[in-house]
Structures are given as C-alpha cells and as structure tokens.
Length: 542
Image (cartoon, rainbow, N blue to C red; front, side, top):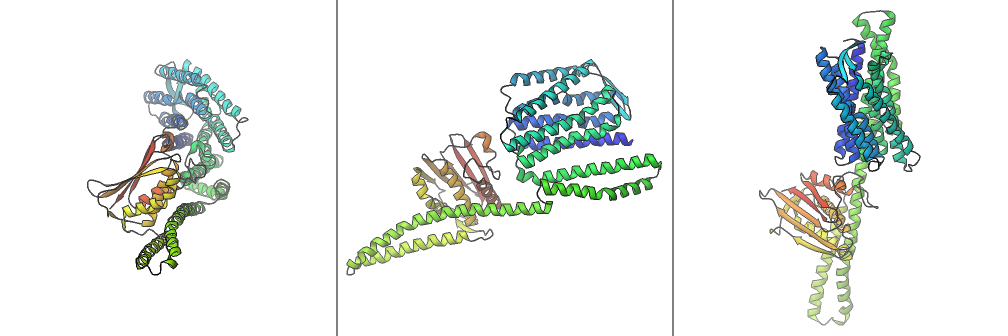
C-alpha cells in the first residue's frame, strides 16, 4: 500500500470512528430529544460514508468497488437533509420549516433511488494512487449542486441566528457548530475533486481530517457550553482522552508525512534510516506536542488530567456534605418542633408543683411524665448528634419501620403546613430488621420524603408502604405521593448531577440517594406522570 492510499485510508477511519462515537454518545444521552436524534442520524450518515470509503479505495475488483460505492451513497445522499433537520431542531425552527425539511428528505430519497441505476454512479475506476473511485453519472452532478445549496443555506441559518441570540452559552454553541461544520465541509468536499478531476489530489487526505475536527468542535461545545444538555461531569474525562488521542494521531501522521518528504529529497531507501529519521523528527517535534497539550489542559480543562480527577473527587465529596447538611437542617427543625411538646408538658407540671407538694398522686405522675419526656428529648438529641458525625458507612441491624417513623416524625410540621395526609402500609412484621447504615438510609429517606412533600404544596396524600419479596431476600419500600409529578421528557434525567427543576435546588439530592442505595447493593426506580403523582421504589437486600 502506497503512503497516499494509507494516509487517505486512515483519514477515513479517523473521521468514521470519531463521528460514530459522537453519534452513539449523543443518542444515548437522551433518546427522546428530537435534537439529539437528528444530530445522531446526521453524524451517523457522515460516519457511514467515511467507513465504507475505506473499502472502496482499497477494493481489489471493479464490481466489488461499485457495489461498495452504492452502499456508501446510502449515507451520503442524506447528509444535506439531516444537517438541515438537525440545525432547524437546534434553532427551534422545525415547526415553521417543516415543509422544507420534508422536501429535502424527499429529494434525498429520489437521489437514493437513482443510486440503484448507472445515472448516479456509472461504475468505479482507478484514479491517481487509489485502487478505485466513483465514475459519476448525470444524477451525481445534480446531487453536488443540491448538496452545496443545502449546506450553504443551512450554514446561513446558523449565521442569521447569532444576532438574535441573547444567551451566552447558546451563542457559543452556535459558533462551535458553525465553524465545526464549515471546516468539516470545506475539508470533506475536497473528495469531490476525484469526481470533478480537480488537482491537486495530494491535499485530499489532509483535508479529510477536517471532518473529524468538526467532531472535536462539537465535543468542546458539549464540554464547555452544555451542547444538547449532555452530562459533562460524566463525560469530561472521555472528551479529554478523545482530544488528546486525536492530537496524538495527527502528531504521528505529521511525523510520517515529514519522514516521507525527507525521503523524497534525500532519496534513501532503507527501513533503518526511515526509522531513525522518524525517531529524530519525533524528538524534534515533541516539545510542540507537549505545548499544545499544555494549552488544552490549561485553557480548556482548567488543569491536567490528575488535577481534573482530584477536582471531581473533591466536588463529589463537597456535594455529599452539602446534601447532608441540608438533611441535618431538616432534622434540626424537626427536633426543635418535637422538643416543644415535652417541654410544654414539663413546664405545665412545674407550674402546678408548688401547690401540689402534698398530693402524692400528682407527684407520682409528675415523676413519671417528666422522666418520659426528658428521655424523649434525650433520644432526639442523641439522634441528631449521631447523624451529624462524619463517619464511613457502617452496617448494623436496624428496625426499618422505626427508622421510617423517625424520619416521618421529623417532617410532621411540614406535613401539617401543606395539609398532607399520611398513609402507612407496613409489612405485617412490625420488627422488620435489616442491616444498613442507619444515618445514610435516613438521609436518603428524608431527601425523598421532602421532594414528595414539596410536590404537594396544595395538599395531598403521602403513602409509605413496605413489603418483603416472595423469596424473602429483599425489602421493598414504596414512597407514593399525589403531587404534580414529573414530565416524561424529564423523568430519565432526575438522577443526573446538577439537574433540578427547583429554583432553589442543587440537583445533587437524588444522585446521592441513588449512590447510597447502590452502595447498600440495592436499587431505586421512579415512576411518574405530570399531574398524576410519583412513586419511588427502593429495594434493599436483607
């Protein structure tokens, strides 16, 4: 394989894998969002063309190359229409321009049908240093005009949207998409040089890499400006690895290209000299690679990979503490409320005490009731102190019904405030014992119960139900509210860090709850509909 063919092959592979990975990542981030779906299809079409092009240019027979070319065209003809569709979805123009989107898909489908005949691609033939490439028919030239028109028109829509965009992040997203697509199309369109017979062919492999750079631009927009609302906390390290890998690939290709250029000038033909030359060039250009990597670390990621990891660990620890303090605040309010009743009873008895010193029955009641109420206050304070201790998870036998009751008691004043009716449906076994970390499970229960009550500010019913599965291996807790519920398009995101629909929420409560339950080898699931209430199901192993 000659170097030119190898370089073009690798550029197709680079583009294909980058865009395929991007397509899959965006799709599975939110499979119901039209923006994500249209972007994934658009990126997949480019990836399809790129990966099948590898087999075309390396085919060993004309018939095989022609068949593979017709398969590659399946992706190519839909690139303009999917680009237009994604852009309109992204700019919220789909409803206004729905007819235009349908027209573009119809035209793409017509070109797809023509691809089955020689009027689109007559055959394939060797060209320059490639084994085979397409020999165009009349429909192919019509497609090129259509392709150019749709791409220019769509890029213009992105440009026109900039002056009216007031949101900083949205504006930056548009800029990254615009420049990424411009670079990608300018680079990728050089492949049409083979079709049109336009020299120089030597630049085509290098220009093809720019299609992959479009993917890098999208990755940066995801990382820095929340493009398509992708969870950047989870994917930050992946994007870092992707960018550094891309940089390394380009660096290696640069070294190989310089070595081949040096070989042409000096006219040597020895593998040992080639290896020595490549190593020398690599040594010379290493500082440049390190400098570029340093710039990426400093200005894009605000730190090196180890520093980013440490920051994420610290962030998670801080988030956990914030949520714990929120729960602690709730507990403190509950304790203050619960202490009022015993203190009131003690105060009442002490007021009557001077006049009842000769009344033995009164003194006996006084001694009994004060003792009970002081013990109650002491238990509440001990619970609060125990909960506030920053200790690692500690599994111990716990009466789950008592733990739930304690949590509900702390929230009694809130239930009264919101006019919430409490319904408890416990397993028949009143002393249901399970090994858990009492404080962590209490925090998880409080968080869920608080969310349930916040969704019923105008009143409702809160049901807490426990059951043991048929095999007596798991305890199942159901927490059911009749509140405002969660819309379907938001339901799959409630466990994402920093995602919250509350104006005062941190978006960290439920992710920490899930982590707590999973650390106990349990599971948590949510069922909800808008205005129909929410059911949270927690399953814990005995």
